[in-house]
Image (cartoon, rainbow, N blue to C red; front, top):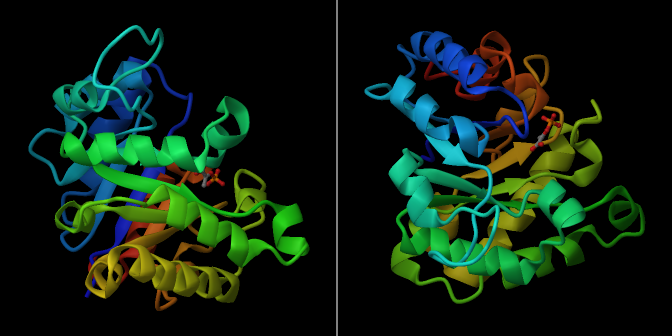
Length: 255
Ligand code: PEP
């Protein structure tokens, strides 16, 4: 039985004051949640303050990105160790916006993954096809490449904390979510490929979560699919009430 995993990616939204106000409200809403892992990913500037606001609660904090090196002359970047010290236990890696807007590749994803695991951060690795790739029948090929290259050379002892987020690019921020059967098809395929990369035991326990226009109206139907283990939420994660509702639906029997 995999514990549902639900994360809100705030992207470049919320000042420190806005972020801590949200976190204060949200921790109260999550007080009764037991069997779900729930995570907020604020911008770097608010990460420490949000972690402090959530201290003693069951809600965790994620970085939205990291640099693969531990330190150095990399202006504007932060390392895995810095995220850990600021209060993060998780980090999002290879979000499609990072791939499309900032030139990230499967190779940089792998380097960041290794750095995250080395520092004890649980990585949330994003994969997903564009609309053109899906419509030209290349979805599985793209997912295979992203998983194989992204997860290469991961030590089995460290792999248990990896979460994979299936985020079809055409569904992110568009209001057009994958249908539950489309999500299930992709998630089952991802789990098979994770098994090839990391072994059957790791794949069986790996949370494969869905991202792309998740909201209170569709989270339950998506989470009801056998291989959908939770959600990575953008827009609907910006309001504590709507994100709490997504959590409730994604972890329905447990909340
Ligand atoms: C995302 O950016 O990871 C995302 C899934 O966004 P949205 O929920 O707004 O589609």
